[in-house]
Amino acid sequence: MVQCKDCEFCKVGPDGQRVFKCDPFANIKEPECIAKWQLIRLDMLVASYQGMLKWYGKLAPLQDKIFKYMQREIEDIDEADHWKLDEEEEEEEGEGEGEGKNKY
Image 1 (cartoon, one colour):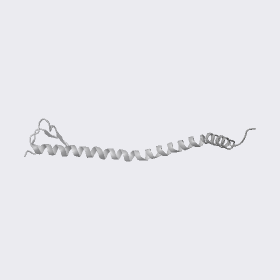
Image 2 (cartoon, one colour):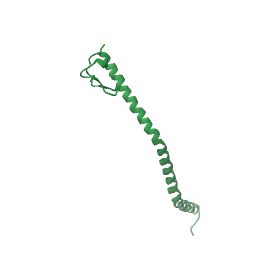
Image 3 (cartoon, rainbow, N blue to C red):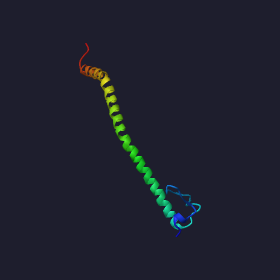
Image 4 (tube, rainbow, N blue to C red):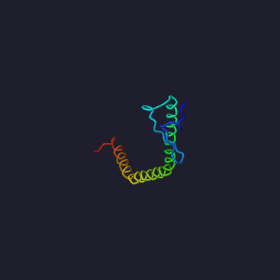
């Protein structure tokens, strides 16, 4: 089996980081290369997911503040409009009491 370090599709940078130029659909030398390629992609996927989780962790306190602020605003609006509901309830109660009585 050809090792990646010996393959012409693998380049090692000055910092030791490997860059793979192999394409599993075009220029794979051995069947094991596909398994290695899948592991590399899976590792990249996990790293992306961990980065996303870090961002969500940073955004969570901000989201909580926004939810609390919106809840207060909605409660303030409901409280400000409460007087409208009180008048409507009084009118409905007043109409309901006079239904059974004669107007004459």
